[in-house]
Length: 285
Image (cartoon, rainbow, N blue to C red; front, top):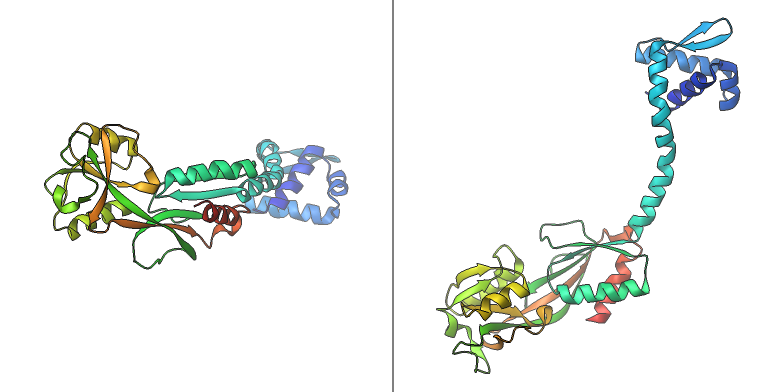
């Protein structure tokens, strides 16, 4: 069913006059009449009837007109709605923040001061594929495979968080082998950082005894402060501990580092700000 035919019908039904409708639509009257016959044939019902010189609506015509009274104005408004949506989408930057969340959030605040009309849509989902910018992590030394424009922005040291009350708290550094019998508060092994931390333990010759899984700095601090175990702590991404009952120790063996990576997707061309924010992140690191 063609939209144009429906508009023709609605004009005729509103004016109840084919000649006036033809003049308003700037369509030849024979062509208009032919379009109405084609519409009726397509629908299988009679829409219009003649009463003398007047055109009247059949019950089917009345029903169709009442529906078109609400539908056509909505359709006429679609171009403006789509233009507004296009403007909004072009100012939206879609982020997937899998590492260095504090750094990225601070950068968002700074960028919005420079560009008040930018909109950030962000999440933390390793399976998400349609984001403009991904901030993620990688094992140190592994080649970067993802993204058409990916940059390693920092080698981040991973510390060990231990309870202030533990026998390790006074040490200047620690070997992972020393804590092989301790319970660990770990990232989920479904997360990239969890996989990296498990590999550190494997290099040290043990499988960690996992007490609790969390990717929240506050949750990790709170658990360690109770004295129940130890945890890996990404020094740059999470910063200093805020709990006085937790101590951060450099890990002397094995080397515990990861790469922080920023990727700009080749799909980011829809946004006027995606590439600008990517460059802004690189400058702010």
